[in-house]
Length: 257
Length: 260
Image (cartoon, rainbow over all chains, first blue to last red; front, side):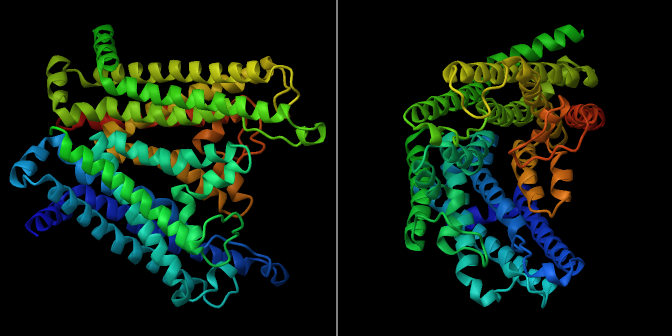
């Protein structure tokens, strides 16, 4: 419990957490801007063409920025201590390494899950208010009907933060950990698409970026290539967190600091 | 004086482990791009003629160059931030007290190394792909090699641009995470985000994103990609140069005034 309190104190007092959450808040503002833009665009079209208008949902800017913010927050939770050497002080204070590692993981997930949920909910709620009565399909579903989608995005962000945290514990380098998550999120999808069918779809369906839509897609999402059931996608998502945490814990407990 | 500074920075760059890890990642993805070509070719060989005509493959050299750009960005960022992290920047500044030449020497070494590596990777993947494909008439790979060389060279140059951009951002922000995330934003997130804009703004804005520039700079279009191509070649080359030079220039101003 004390370890948790200490980790929480660290995370909320470092400047990088404030910067990361500020970036998240900036992305929420971009979501509002996007919703306003969609509304204006709708108004500017002749009524006959409005029915065919397709627009990305309000939370789209966040869907791009949230994973990066989450990964950075998770990675820095541990790599910054290796960078400064303070990890040795931490380990001297909490000699039980599994407990120290678990405390950090709980705090990281405990910050990213509510922050992710609050930001996507704010984006969707305000986005709907901005678009108002205009019949844009991706803005039509009330927020209460999107609860699984919003929860899915928040859990997804928390898992990415834990993957960043696990990568940080294994690599002990901010640059290495962030790049590893970027490769996982952004480089592997186009590579998977290059595989010959049916392996492109199979490999693509288990990639981290493709899981939220298979858990609960946004309203009026194009959809199509889902191979996993929602439960299956949740299981794959949790497997990512489990593998990252196991690798991180193994490296953290076994190696010298 | 300047030459000594460049020699010192080169010694640093070639002796730290991170340089070799980063180069290794770029080379592994280049090999992966070639393996994907081998895979496509073997599938193509087993196809009847009418299905062969429908095979489409992205240019592996562009894919390899795109990933090499990310690696170069990490290299450029770490070249600055690692010294701040270890505190060795204070030693460096004691030895080399004139700050403008110091930063310039770092930029020359990092930019030069990334440029050379970028050209090597894009050219070897391009030529390797053509060797693997041989005389098979796969769509998009029947053009004369000489016609493609300017575009491939520009792709290689973009790798150097990524390194200098990240280098400048890292010197400004003095944070590995901050610099890498900003480059990732420009490298991946902004091109996707511009794709959501309605026409003609998607094409106009995406023409200014980094990976849209090399083809435009040599007068080719960006067909079959998310990138637009509204810029004339000189303008595209100027935007590329601006990406490479403005962040280090801004960093130079800040570096001369700030405490280490």
